[in-house]
Amino acid sequence: MQTTFRITDEDGIHARPATALVNTANKFSGAESFAEANGKKVTLKSILGVLSLGLEQGDTINIICEGAEAAEALKALENVMVNEGLGEVHA
Image 1 (cartoon, one colour):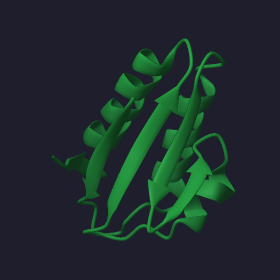
Image 2 (tube, rainbow, N blue to C red; image 1 turned 120 degrees about the vertical axis):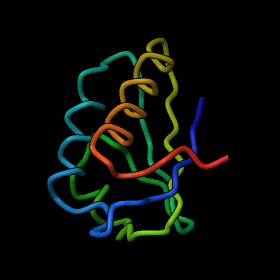
Image 3 (tube, helix red, strand yellow; image 1 turned 180 degrees about the vertical axis):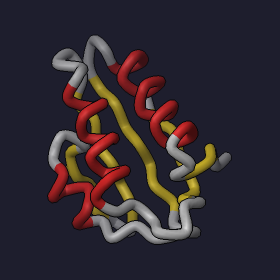
């Protein structure tokens, strides 16, 4: 399962929002969550991995969840992206 977002936050994905994503991903032990951008795929359970993507306003990111809790994890991560003003769903 995956959703693509376009980063709308003028500061991109920096430490505070990256922490929110990592904390959310870590709530789901039954799911593996990944972020894919600029040809690089990292686990969403690592702050350093998320920050290493260097996401800036206008970039696109795919959030991918696999496993028994994939649907729940993806919905929770979508909520963080939208509610924190980080990005919008990109069709």
